[in-house]
Length: 255
Image 1 (cartoon, rainbow, N blue to C red):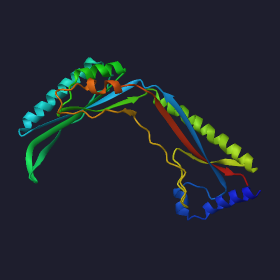
Image 2 (cartoon, rainbow, N blue to C red; image 1 turned 60 degrees about the horizontal axis):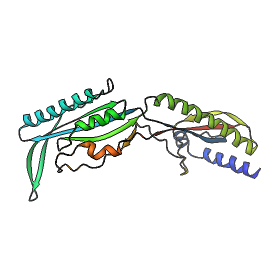
Image 3 (cartoon, rainbow, N blue to C red; image 1 turned 120 degrees about the vertical axis):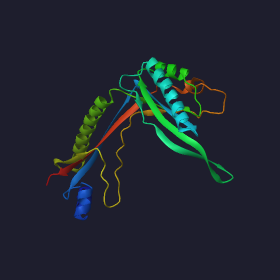
């Protein structure tokens, strides 16, 4: 019974917080229970994305632009040859800016830098490996990232949210039974954890991600024409992705 009184007193303490802060934290003024539900599932990625960065510098802007365009044409052709997924190929607009170097602490104009990025997704690692086998990294063409994703992620996350919500109901029921109180109605349910005005934070909601990154070791661009596959082939494995959903619910205690 003493524990119950402490629980109710803690809830009443929340009600003493200024109204503006109470509203900002979405906490009710009456006694309540805050519970968290969490659901996770591991999935095997079935899509593999690759990002290519192109950079060319020359004192003649037209020459730099032509070099970047020639590299872009080569990469786009390689994307299609390796069966990039439909509508997954993306190319950014050209970025043009002056490039400077420093000699004896003096800024020296090196030329005009033209840059753009290209990306595409593939349905298998073999297609990505085939693409990498055709590319040669240099100062002008670099592999800037490889990502994985699961095409059914939206459906899986919806199911995880449902399971997490079920957990909050069960956790609230068990907690109420252990204190000998009766649950009232559901006050609020959210994917974001409340941050209490008296300094206790219940955690943070993890942001969604497009996919997990596969590490690309640094490539020495001074080496004589290294192939990307010579460097990253052993690292290119699918692995697995862990999808996670959290739900925070506040239930009122019946008076």
